[in-house]
Structure formats: structure tokens, C-alpha cells
Image (cartoon, rainbow, N blue to C red; front, side):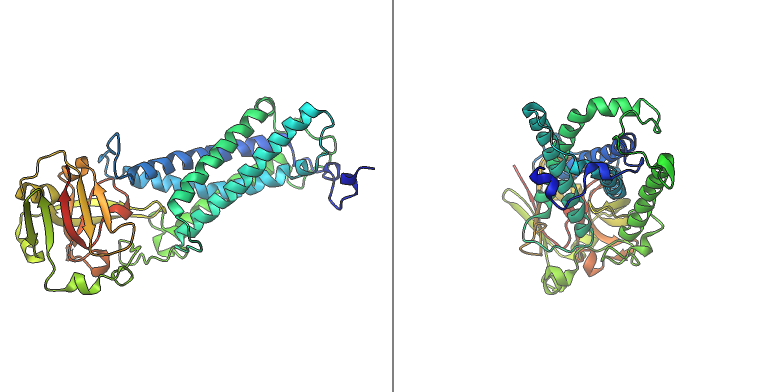
Length: 389
């Protein structure tokens, strides 16, 4: 008797349910792969949108583009949770399969199980820290953005290896009926309580329910935003607030009578009070503000077109800008605004929101609002705008 057989673990043959079949695993895995793919692509879009220097400029049209992609990002990630759980339940018996005796098969099995271990571990961690980010609970000392991005490549890489190894079996079972037993384990003979089709229907319902519940708690789906219990941001004031003025440490400087917004280009520089800004030609645009966490909301923003301010100091078109905030020691203290955003007529130094002066938490005395731009880069409490190049 081998040492493995004496360990207190179940054996593959002890799992007799017909629901734990390759036919079910492949169908659940197909949709899980689609969800991972959508989350990966939309995550790359968000990462690229937040780069300071973009080889290909991120588009300013349509204004709602970033909003849609990040809504899809959260929806796909949320739907993946029940799909992953069902997939793990279905393939769980394979964990206890006896290793093959031949060296070649043993190596292949080891690589296959190793890729699955990496895929499962990375997927659980990726989904977990994503939910933690939505709740703004950062129980770590590392960068969420860099870690989340890196894990995405680990997940996709392991998924591609897994698909490559299992492709012949996947094609076989997807090409047949879900009840086909040709690829079943020999011990999988006991009928399930709900049948394979019932299990699949229940899985799709669970995925949809997870999306609706998750979107309601994070504010992704309009109309359910008041139920946003997972998100710490209050939705009752219209536009969510990720970081308050008190948290940013700008209450005193933002409300000081000495506040000035400085616009600089080369040797030319002007310093404008909020009253000066209000005296300049104003424009109003309805623009969404959206976050990678999935929430988004429309606002009616009024203020000075940024291009007007740049013309005021003689800045040419096609120049990137460095935007500095009154807040210090955060990733959003200094951001770069690409030239296509700076020159877009809808980009504003916003002074009013929905017809009222900006609230302090929304960036008073002045903030940036631009179309199709990540919410974290819509700089609040602007102190200086510098033309680069």
C-alpha cells in the first residue's frame, strides 16, 4: 500500500455525483473565462488611462467610455465569483486523483495541476482585493493598483495554460450534450438532485444575482445607488466622494481668503482668486465621473473652459499639463493631463456642480472635470496648472 493511500484524504473514486463532470466544468469554465477576459481587458483600459505618458492618446470621446468599461470590469469580476465557486466544486474530485506512474504523464499532470493551483490562488486573491478596494479597506502596505495589475497577468497566463492543456477535452464535451457521460469519471454514476441542466441554470441565476447585488452595494447600476452599503461613499448627495477635504487635509487652505489658482506657461504666470475665475467666460457641460471601483454618476458642471485659461497665458495647443492639488502626500497630489484633454472644449476648471457652488468635499474652490477620464484623476482643490514642454 502506498503512502498516499494511507493519508486521511478522500479518493477520487469516492465522489460519485454525475454533476461533477467535465461537461458541466467546461460550460461553467467557458463563461468564467469570458468574465476573466472582460475584466482583464477593461482593467488594462483603466491602467492605460491612468498613465502619465500615453504613446497613443486616450480618447476624450465618448465622454461615457471610461464609465462603461469600468462598470463592465466590476460586473465581470462580480459574476466570476459564483462561477469560480461552482467550477471548483465540480472539479474538486480531481484534486485527489492518483498521480500517473509514467514519467511523461507525471510531468504533464504536475504542470497541469500547478497551473490550476496558480490560477485558483491568484483568482481568489484578485477578486478578494478587488472587493476590498471597493470597500476602501486597505489592510496592506502594498500598492493596490500595481498588485491588482500584476495579478491580472498571472491569472490570464495561468488560464491560457490551463485552456491549452485541456483544449481537446473542452472541445469534446462542448461539442456534445451536457448529459453525455463519455468524459465522466468512472465513479460518477449517482444522479444529482437537480440534474446537470438544473445545476447550470442555478449557476447562471447565481451569477446574475451576484451582479445585481454587487452592483447595488457598490453603486454600479443606476437606480440602486441608495443601497450602496458595501461602498463607504454616500450616494445621497448625488456625486460620490472618495476622499473628503478633511481626509485630504485641505480644509484650511481651500477656504482661506489667500487662495489663488496659478496658471503657468514658461515665464508667464497668473494667479487667480475664485472671484477672478467666476468673472471669466463660463461653460456648462453634463459629464459623468466614474471610478475603477465601478460607481459612476452624471453631474452638471459649470466653470471656466481649461482652454480659455491656457489661452490667457499664451499656451499653444498640443501640450500636456501638470495639475497640482492643495492636498499633499497622495497619488492624486500631482497628475498629468494629456494634451487632447487639455484642448477639449468640455474640459473645465469646474466651480459649480448642479447649479450650486462646489462643496468642499467635491473640490472647492476649483477642480478639474474632463470627459472620459478616471475619477481619481479629476483633480480636486486645484492649486496650480503648469503647461509642460
